[in-house]
Amino acid sequence: MMALEHEELHVRRGERTGLYVVVAVHSTALGPALGGARLWRYETPGDAVSDALRLSAAMTLKAAAAGLDLGGGKCVVCDDGELDAVRRRDLLLDLGDAVESLEGRYVTAEDVGTSPEDMVVVAERTAHVAGLPIDRGGCGDPSPLTARGVEAAIRASLAWRDGDADPAGRRVVVIGVGHVGVDLAARLSRAGAEVLATDVDPAKREAAEAAGARWVEPGSAAELDCDVLAPCALGGAVDTRNAGRLRAGIVCGSANNVLADDSLADDLDQRGILNAPDFIANAGGLIGIAAERHGSTPAQVSAAVDEIEGVLGGIYERAAAAGTTPLAAAREVAAERLRAPARVAA
Image (cartoon, rainbow, N blue to C red):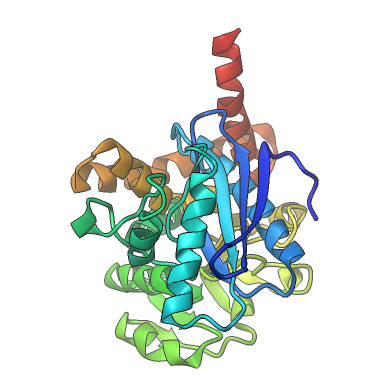
């Protein structure tokens, strides 16, 4: 388990289902901790706790680097594989109870395994929920905004590496054809990129091809020769086993914690591979949910997400000037903003 640096950690057994709901609040220095609720099958409750701790820390970085007045938190819910419609609803109510018990210090939203419609059920037990469907006053599925932000990050990366932000004619390998991955594939295909896509679920092939991508088998997709490798599934897509075999010029996707270990940022840098910090590249969904809380118009939300291109360009400039990696530079930007409240208070 990672070293603890969090404000709060709650492990609660749902009264309706008996399943564990874990909420990690990493930081509320800038505002309430916001982060999605992930429904996943964990081998042990300890694995769920570790995931919540890791993901909530990443949310703090994401919110701070994006300039949002929000902290970082995460909820993970343990799926035992026996969730029929009734029991799933009960689990969502248990989730809502866990969120409500934090009295607003944590705000939840959809994530892997949950949906905006699920958040409607959660909202029966707590008001501290975002990402509701559009017809309920929310922003709906944040995946299109996340994909929009990743495209902006890819443009910034191409501009920094090659001097041309246009993805037309570039080869992009999208790993993970979920909601974000398929949206990203479609956006890049429309922009003229050659998109190759894969997923461990072969049933995703039809959606990938409908988005304009060419399907490739998942086994060694990360090692294909390409301009951009875009991991859009779970974390750890780049690890010690494949980092030395990557043939991408850029790593930039929507997955959280793309690098299995932060030390791999140095390895990629030494090999001349530009690594876009994931908490910068995938911030579009969070930006959208934050805007929902402030009543922004769709046009204002899109414009805010598009600013990721300029933010990431600034990160690259900072890293080059300091002789460090983009990941280190992005972490320092977030750390500076997290220190700002203390300076103001002083």
